[in-house]
Length: 210
Image 1: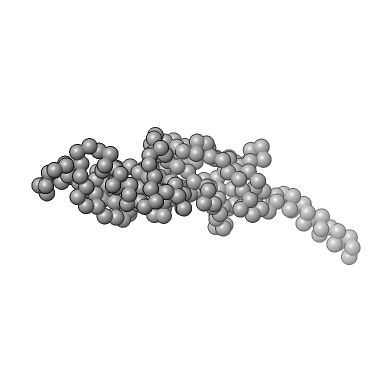
Image 2 (image 1 turned 180 degrees about the horizontal axis):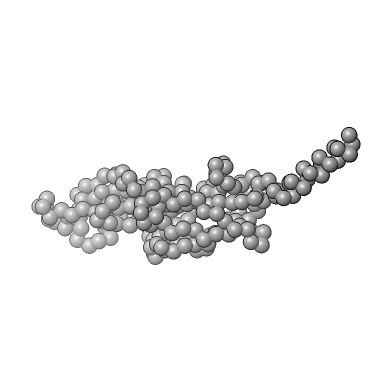
């Protein structure tokens, strides 16, 4: 009986050695993204450390490709005690939360600090506001000869899957200063972006279509 028990222990140990260690708590993970602020079309590199797992996957929450479909999970490679991958390039400017999981169907984990910014140059240096509506007023005032007529919050279009806690869309009607003719009014869509879930708002972009 003792011989049989020893044999079973030996087999179990060998199986564990082949399959590798179980995953640690993903809350201990440390990530580095370079560059942390990317240009549209750029694919940053992510490095994840302090994780023991058989595999690791990453996704950018709300990121869509040129087709408008959500970008799926990407596998990382284990290199020199760290997990590395090249992140996909979202089709839209914005801020994208980063999530990890150890395998398909496994519990996902993220942190409020794990964010990829996809900005045009100069975005981070624009004035910030506690209220996203103030972004609209600032944009109109920065363009000489324009007077705001009205604006209202606008829902993100169906193809836009960005986190609404970090992105707000407004439709704006404005006119040349002193011109009261409604036929001369112009329209623009203003997207405000938030610097993290508790951060301030600034202009992300102004476009003629949402």
